[in-house]
Length: 243
Image (tube, rainbow, N blue to C red; front, side, top):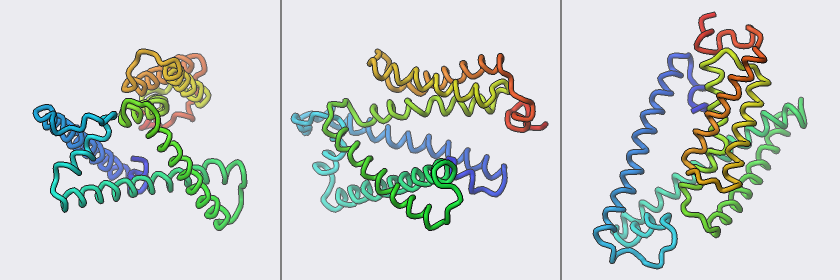
C-alpha cells in the first residue's frame, strides 16, 4: 500500500489508489477462500480421492492440482504459483533491504557514504535476508504447526496490530505525541507476544485486533497526560487537517 501511494502525483490519486487496493483485496480474498471452499466440498463428497497419509491441510491444493487436473493445466498452474511466489519474495527482499539501508545504515551506522557503498550493503542485505527466510521456511515446514495460513496470521498479528494502532492514533486523535505513541506501540507488541509465548487460548486471528486496541488505548491515555505541541499534529489528523 505504501509503495502505491508514495508514487502518486497528488492526494486525490493516492486516495484512489487506496480504494482500488481495498476492493482488489476483497476480490482476492473471495477468490482464495472460494477456492478453499470448493476443494473442501470436492473432497467432502469424494473422500476416497483424498490421501489418508496427508498430515497437514496445506498439502491439499498441490495434491488436487497434481491428481485431478490434466497434465498440461497442472503444469501451468504450478508454474504460475512459482512465478507469483518469486515475484512476491523478490519484492519483499528488495523492500526489506531498502528499509534497512534508509532507516539504519544511512542514519545510524554509516551516514554520508556514496551510493555505491549503500548499493553493496543492500545487495548483501538481500542475500542475508533471503538465507534467513529460507531457514525459517524449512523450520516451519518441519515443525508441528497446524497450518501455514494460521501461522502467517499469528506472525502478522504480532506486529501489524501495533502498527495499525499507531496509524489510528495519528489519524483520529490529536492527543498522542511521539513518546506516547512509541510506548503504546511497545505495549501493544508486548501484550500480543505474551499471549503467543504463554499459548493463551486466543485465536491468532485476534492478535492484530488485540495489538491494535492496546496500542490505541494506551497511546490515547498517555496522550491525555502528555499532550503534544500543537505544531506536532498540525495538518496530520482528521481534526487538524485544515489547520
